[in-house]
Each structure stands twice: as C-alpha cells, then as structure tokens.
Image (tube, rainbow, N blue to C red; front, side, top):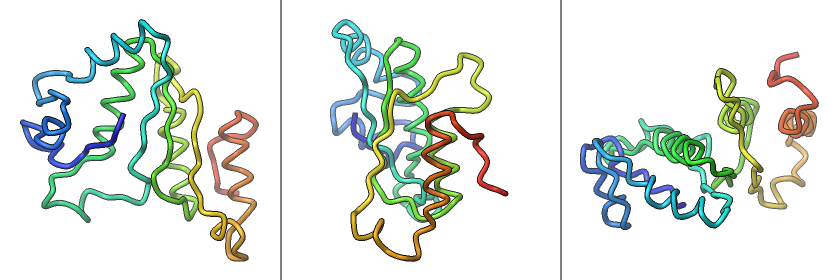
Length: 154
C-alpha cells in the first residue's frame, strides 16, 4: 500500500482519491481493499514515510504520514492481516530507531499488535561510514527480535 499522505489532514484526502482510495474523513477507504486481501492471505506491506519526516516541514501540503500509517496499519490489523513496513528513508540516530520501534511494536496496544517484519532500507555506503554507531544498530536489531527492551538510554 503506498503512503499517499499529502492532504491527509483535509476532509477529502484528495491525494488518496486521485490514487483510487476513497478515504475521506468520514469513511475508511482501505477496508474494502483489506477484506479482499484477507481472502487471499496476503501480508500487507506499507512503505513508511521515514521517521525524520515531520508535518511542520510540509505543512502547506497538509501532510500526515504518521496518521496515514497508523490508519492503514490499524485497519489491516482489524481485518486480521499481517502487516510489514519498509522504511522509505535511512535511519540516522537513536530517536529514529525508537520511533521505528514504537511503530513496529506499539507499547500500549491492548491487542498486542506488531509488525510481521520490517524492511530496513539503508544505503551500503551509509552503513560503511565510520561515524555510524553500530551499538545503536545492534540494540535496534535486538529490540526488533525481542532480545532487548525498547530503551536506547544506558
């Protein structure tokens, strides 16, 4: 499912309408799609906005990438679909790792929803740079596998 989050903070959700998702404020436009996907045991893949994206940077587009991501993930979980996420942008610091973990494993979810898998999109040259903190990456991977707590502060 594409992340079409422009104009998501408007009543019409015009960008989603243009892409074929009838998802205005008063209607869940993803449910019909997810019902069909459930019949075929599909794992839903959401390309996520990237944790460094903020609404303030794109206010004139009325963008809400985080709101759309949660709407899509919750609608998919409501239909019993497994959900995976691919980050669209590289992760550069502890705060970004924490935000990814909060999306992958929501802490206060009474239904204990979580992502089936997470595709970590990083460019190889970035991972080979000396200023990358591999201990943070190691902690992130351990948290994703449930081998550590979701806490990067020592």
